[in-house]
Length: 258
Image 1 (cartoon, helix red, strand yellow):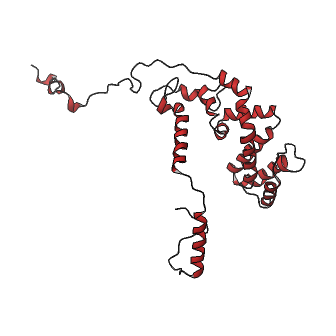
Image 2 (cartoon, helix red, strand yellow):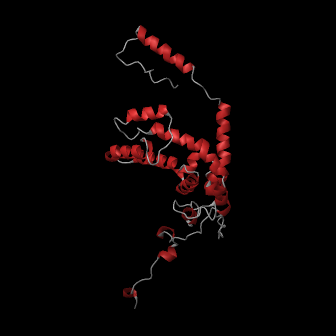
Image 3 (cartoon, helix red, strand yellow):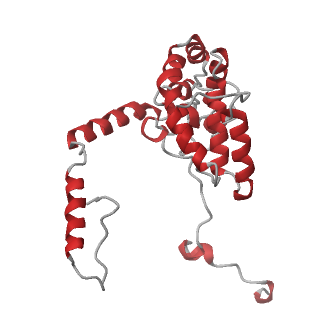
């Protein structure tokens, strides 16, 4: 059972004092006040997730032009490559599942950037990408990256200044004294939620997304020679132990002939 972080199990050499019981009662009281999610709500979320993503699962529902997991044709992977010029229709539809789904797709993120440029708010996504580069970059480059991101997006009069509330900015400025790879997490989360609640819904309703959905590729189904989940049978050489006795005998050599 999950308890607050200040609740720790009793060590082998610790005694149960009055202070120990007071701390335990306090952390148990906090645990009782935590919000709990009903099982019915969790099950509804799982059902919604499964029904939404079921048609997009290549194993459960199949995929076009063919399923590369059960055939030798890898066209499906080529059409869904990160550098694909024209995305497939199923891929564009997945961008509407969630904002995270859109950002994790390089093609979807590029089209979202084009949309933000038209709305003069592309600096929000650029700041989010810079924070991702800082988080996953090398440790030696962290101080330089933190300084560059601050000068470009957060400093007064920055060229691509992003709108962050005063409380988040105050916590970020305090962390800049000792820069680390997670020092901009609060600011990144603020911009992420701003794009999720404001820009992302408008992107799904925009003509840009509707045109992408209409022009997306629907690959034709390839012809199948055999049953869907069967490959062409391959005949291997039989084992010598399984050969008939007459076939396994070799003719006698020339020494035995008259």
